[in-house]
Length: 617
Image 1 (tube, rainbow, N blue to C red):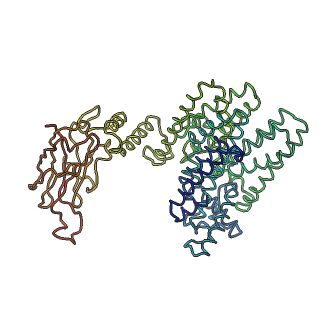
Image 2: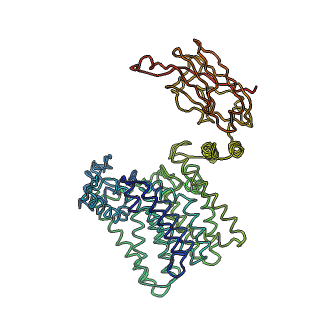
Image 3: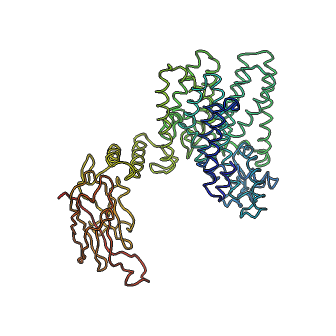
């Protein structure tokens, strides 16, 4: 983690890569040693290694709601107060304010508490680096602090996954435990909120809620009365991270009321008292920020009220619906039903917690979760989902498990590609719906771009097959063909790679759409399916008296003097210069406007090009 912070602050990225590779090697060596490996066996080594490999991908900036937790942590730890105005100003962001205009934080305090250790370590490390002459400020605002807290979210999330692995292993063995944890990690929004958006509270929520659920199950199984205090404290921390997760506090309480083990009233009292004690921390903060009328303010800023529970929307809507965006969760719910065959009470409690969380979050004014990847507000249920998935996998015949592993891997690939499409906004704004049809088209386009990037790196026939299967458009034939003609001023949407360097933006004059050249040369990249002797015709117009050399894949073909006005120029191209895949067509100009007047302002355009046409000879 320290190396990640250092790289974000300006250290060479190669240093982090070296440390990650070395760490993975050490983990592998320890796991291979049966004498000294202890807890770290093969499956756990795989999880730890994957976590190390993903660490460099963690986004290191604080934004969105995370800013509110950051300013609280900084103000309390460095300024020793809760006057947040100077903290927002130091970050250069507009403060969140109360109705009276005072700087405040609408987030509960849990995220700031979990970030506090990383923040203090960053402060110590930054102060030491500054004292040794490094160009970094130990002011609580600089990059090391922001990188440290986001990396901390990632570490907390990985810790939650390892806790789940231990609980699932205890129930189903290490094979199912590994498969379920990898699926929960990579085929749900867990991956997104640990790497792409770790400044939000959801990564911390995954940790706090998982620690709470696992502690409850362990205490319940081992019958340790005093440990209910720990369960209560973890439940309080869970609530301080995300208030909506408080519905899970009911599960241990109902469990004790139904089972009635020896001295159950005392256990329940310990549990509730410890949870309430943690809640007093939040109460004190609210009184400090909002005064005695804090309740109405808290309800307002958390978008509570004014709407009925949108249960179907939360579960099935294309606008971040739980099952629509994350189909894996359906298997988890089925797992709870299977769980009821041998632990009915726990299965019913898991289902009840799910129902309660859906109703609570469906009652919020923005039930879709604003700019959410999936139903982010239900990530506090990650432990319950993992337990359900473990039950579903355990119910499969052993011979079917390899097939289930393939299905889960495909879901993970689908989810990760969905993340990129969502984050880019290429289909819709991040707070809007994305249908499967739109997603499939965007995923196909993304895969096609990856195939395009492999041009000349893999055999031509293989490249052409992949490009064709993904709906690639050809210039000269195939299922999707331009029939030999490309309008340079209105290039097809399916050929985002067509326009290379050396062009200005498209223009139109009447019915003619065209682009003007930029600089000494202009290039196009055209996909050809079946190279053959051909004629390539270019319709262009000189902007200054100039000659044009036409080249194909860096090989000059011919040079022509351009006539005034629009004209067509034909170039004979032998098949030996063409290849299956992308071909570079270049126009090299003998004269540009700035050759005669180097101080000339405006565009340095030698020609305007209307279209090109390819035809076999």
